[in-house]
Length: 141
Image (tube, rainbow, N blue to C red; front, top):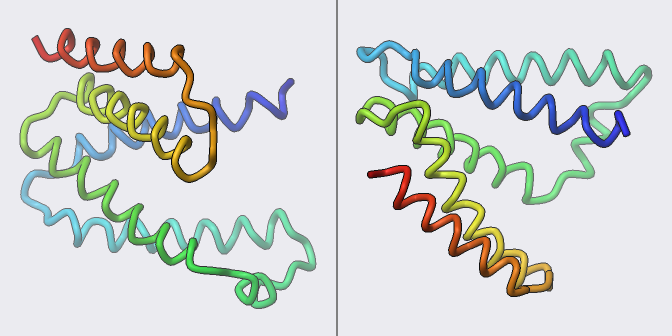
């Protein structure tokens, strides 16, 4: 059970801290300049954690196994960071920006799952989409 829950708990915790960091970024700093430091720290953290958790691992061997996803993931992560930073700079509240984004994301991923991964598109999921959209109307009133 712990192996099932700890990744979700880590994600929730880090996501909360992420939004505090994004909302707290100084208004006068260019988000892209800030993200160069962010990604340098991230790269160094991943490098250190790789060797800490994979004793005797071969990082170069692992690099040879990569495909397009790691490169696309890098571009997508920058888009996520920049999107949230500019949303907060534009005046979005920390309590609603992520909620609105997550509701739209949930709706999009239902269709992504159906179209690309052949996941079932059930009435329960469609009802969930309707509830998400209704929630967006309510939260933005």
